[in-house]
Image 1 (tube, rainbow, N blue to C red):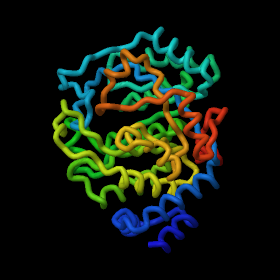
Image 2 (cartoon, one colour; image 1 turned 90 degrees about the vertical axis):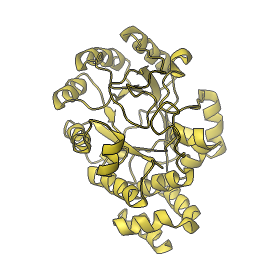
Image 3 (tube, one colour; image 1 turned 180 degrees about the vertical axis):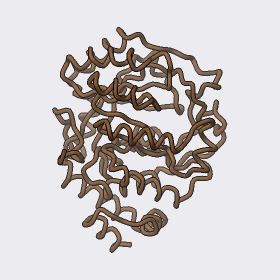
Image 4 (tube, helix red, strand yellow; image 1 turned 45 degrees about the vertical axis):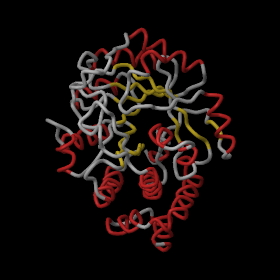
Length: 338
């Protein structure tokens, strides 16, 4: 096992069998996390990049089995921010020092590419990076958003296991999800994806396949979080994902893709106290504080009991582990040759 860790530290490449071996063996966890932290330090440094998250609509036409925003969840209190509210929230974040604005929503058809493009243009006047997380769109729509100034796009694959994907995503296609990601790459976005760890019926084999897909895509950002069940979904009675396994998937992703950006996800902090700092010491280098107004934030419930953090608390917590807040936009170093 230690030889495999040495190999991936040096070559940034493992095959599926080797990934499965490491994911299955808990005796080497600390060595694995330490190796990921070393590679993070060497390749992307000790700065932590903050992204100001604005959850601007919890309306979604999809029915993903794990998500509290699913269209068939009649208990969800729906909301949609106006363009003015979105831009105003972005300006508040910018005034606090944030250099990246993340606009995230359910798949809400009200926000056409043209409508979003107008919002992006207004935010881009403030000299910040804009990341979108608005789901599956056509190539032409992605192009409209790119031309408006969008820099990055987050579209999590969640699982690359075709059978599991089909079970959890009614009327959706894994192939289309992948095609969207390749379209984003082609259009020049910094492209982000990721997976949920601990979904019912998920296997270690499929988690290894997820990591290999990230490598094949040559993604610029990867978000990995443990599955947390929401009571108003078909998976409401399922068990939560395992924090340590999610951390291992994240650490191996760092070792396989050393120059990418990896967030310490909110789900990790929600599942385990101090989970964010643990993730930042195991390969992560990004935190996404939520800037959505509190009245709306509590309604954006993909999973329950999401934790929040304010800027000053975050700065203090980071200093305890020898990390500092970056003052730049935090572009992916994975694109250093472009």
